[in-house]
Every structure is written in structure tokens, then in C-alpha cells.
Length: 186
Image (cartoon, rainbow, N blue to C red; front, side, top):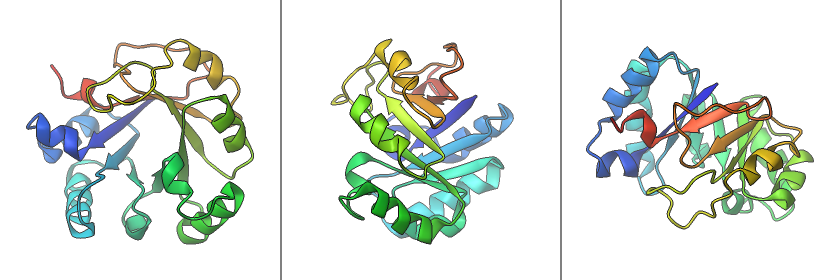
């Protein structure tokens, strides 16, 4: 299954409109999408979410910004971001769940230790990567095919991220192919 990634900074750099990409992922019947904007204000993020919703009817996840949970279907947090709630990850997830209820909750993972920690948490899925190097996150450690082996360690559905292409095909341990730039680079 494809999980689209709408990264605001990457879209701006490549001069791709949020509306155009939202319409494309709707036309492709992509069931889940994540909106990520690490530098925008709450007002900008809300405006963007409303713009996405004009064109896209699938499940919409927001990255990190729990304040906007009422506008989306779930929240995705990174390793550093979850620890802003508590260094005890079980407690952190409990705090997040109080805010988001039964909405989707995903957590980024990058290695076996983080996957095993995630297995003990009340999550709906994990993101695992980077599979390949990307221009978007040049600092990300590339796991390559090791990611496919690591995915087998997860008790949660796994979204493989980082340089994943529409043409990629993986065995059953990968639930989501998280695709960003390959959706708008022709």
C-alpha cells in the first residue's frame, strides 16, 4: 500500500503546489498521506491541511503538530519529538493518546533498538528508514536491504521510508511504501 508524504519544504524547493500533489494522490487512490512541515506556523499548517482536504479524501496524518489533531486522522512523531512528552516512551504515548484518542499514531524508527522499543507501545504503525538516500534528508542513515530484515522485528505494520519509489515492490513485512518525491518527480 502507498503512504504519500507531502513535505512542505520539499514541495516549495521543487515548485510543486500542495493542491496539485493532493489532487494527484487522490487520483491515484492513495489511502493514506502524511503532511510534514517542520518550520511553518500553526496557522500555515492549518491552511495547508484545509487545502489538502479540498482535493484529498483519504486518511490524513500530521507530522508532530498535535495541536491540529482535530483536522486530521492521525499523528506521526519522530524519536526526538516523542521524547518531548516524556523520556519514558510508554508514558509519552499515554499522554499523546489522551489527546488523539483512537486516531492513528505512528513513530519513526531507524534501528533494531528503536523497533523493539516501539513494539512495547500502543502504536498503529512505525516508519522505518531510510531505505535509500534522499535529497530531502541527507543526514539520514541509509539502511538499504537491512531495513527489510529489520521490519520483521516489528509487531506493528511497517512503513518503509527514504527513497522509496512507486516502482518498488516488497514482501509482506512492509505494509506501506512511504513515497514522497517520486510522486512528483517526472
